Image (cartoon, rainbow, N blue to C red; front, side, top):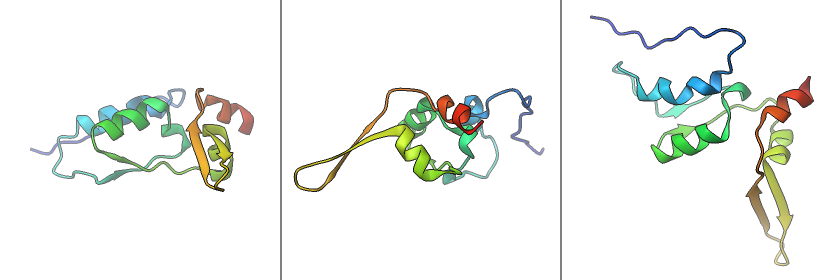
Length: 99
């Protein structure tokens, strides 16, 4: 018996809502080491859940520098090190900014 791990979602649905279920409901013999998505697979919940379950999440950002500025507050310290803290908002602003 062959098992297929797929789900068709509409073009209007955000794929990030399906990432965790895709991994957790995987019944195939293939167990991925890394989950990689485009920018539409990203949200705070996915980063948290995948880290909690020891899955490696490696999204691909088309504009990496813009995403770093959007996601993190970066401050220089007196010893010239950088302090990074996660901003408290959703990434959907990024999609609106790209048009």
